[in-house]
Length: 123
Length: 392
Image (tube, rainbow over all chains, first blue to last red; front, side):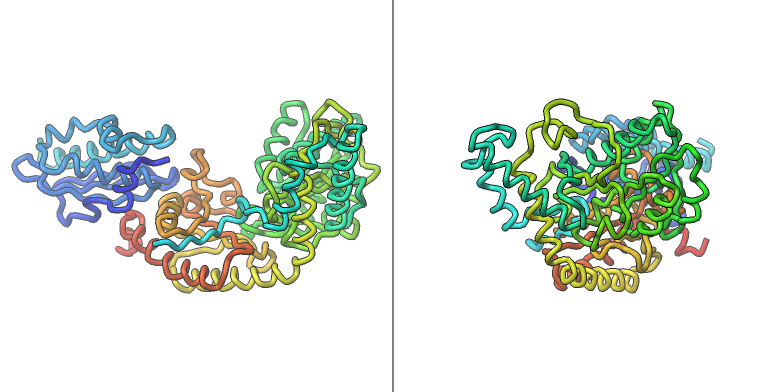
């Protein structure tokens, strides 16, 4: 049911972990529904120099978090903010219909982390 | 990696070789329609009668009380709807439990729309109903009590005989969905006072798509499948002959090996349960500690989600199942896990490993070696576990 790309990101997730004193942290989802994504950003000169994630969730939740961190790493805040769930799905060679919400969650987690960064830095 | 460990016998089993061998002639030389007058049909009819005897003998029934169906769901649908419709002039109330199989629950929901009233009894933390609750739920309008023999997800075995006795005293029909129990637990419908019982062949090394409903002589039941005169005009449709032969052979084999097999499989399950509980912290055993199916083990691992656990196990060749929302295709985790009082976030982390004939000590050792590091890795990735580690 999952593409090879999803299984690759699920079994070897990129950027797992936390960043101490992160410049921006975003957490979305809730345990009740079975998905929580937390994204940490390290930002220098408006550029995302490091990103880590932690996820409680299914295979698609882990894979979308993993690829989303890969997609925004090295990007400027402005570029990263444009990440869409559609782009996440495409990068994973598709997701089953029932798992589309995981890609939405990944987009929201990135946006929440950026918002946190902006709030902390008055930007 | 080439090791494969199948621990999903509650989902389905393979067909036993002797069972398959018994079935094969009925696809080729013994192809007649059992309803036909000619010898092609008559010879097949004899074999169907024999299969009926095999099923009857295995559960302590009479052959004429066995009706073949297309599986457990049909048997459940027929029992619930058939009793409800046949007793419409007597009453419109049915008592069942919150942890039944969907085949039964959805039949009840259908009847609710038809004006029937259904009481869904709660269960305790171990998945046990209370016989007192059943008694209290009975009204003058109660026409049927249906309690599953053993639960497919958590393995809990219900006090069937006591509920059956209560139903008999109150002159109410008693049905049990024994799909998970037949072949694993010794059942005798006469001694236990059961009026109707559903069973399905593919849970005990028989083929898929065939099952049976036992209906005690004298119990009035409205037909579900209308048409020809098959099954003494109670269930229409040309017989799934090979399937029926397979069911008969499979149940006979299961009954003959029941005690020895169940004992061996129970030993493996106990070893697995003890090992998992010892090796993996923040873990709960679901279901009753003692009154459970010999092959059932069901756990909840806190802070992780079941589907990601299943996928990781699958990568290592281990086949299990989960009641998490993501595995069930709905937004909520399994109704059974919620009924035993688990909060959503814990129910999402469930794993069922159901053992059977092909499992060995080595299989259990392999699972005990592979499972704990997978759970640990997923926890290291989980923001929920972080909070626990931080003492928050």
